[in-house]
Length: 143
Image (cartoon, rainbow, N blue to C red; front, side):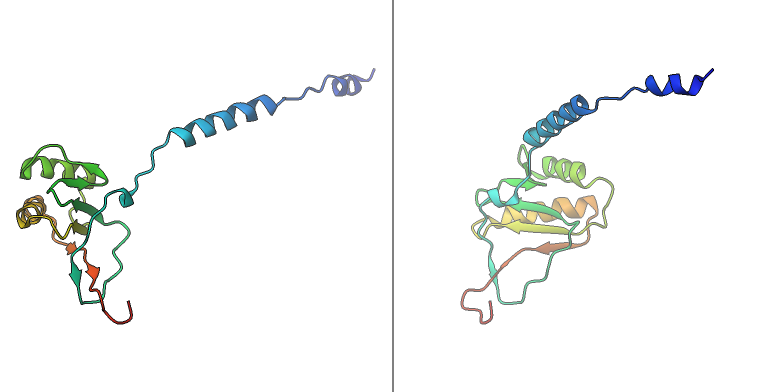
């Protein structure tokens, strides 16, 4: 009696072709529905400075102020005016990390009050590492 020979004929296969089709369809769905945040969509004309620019850290929180004084934290616009809505938006994006560096990108035509309001909100939240983004001065040699 050969029991082992009978078992070899009963081997079965798992067909993974349909599984691969489903996984590729899901992958395409997630790629197509994902939104990519682009900071380049906001056209901000930075003020000019003659000092050489430093490379900003990768994990920096970026706050953009356009020429009309609207705030953008992490790529999304802050609804409302004043310090309180700005503080709420910054706290939501930054979380509990108050040692995180912050880059303030304000348009050259932005009213000074908008920049001071952003700096005030950051100070009230306890952020200490603040950098103002600038563009190199025109006519600056080597740039």
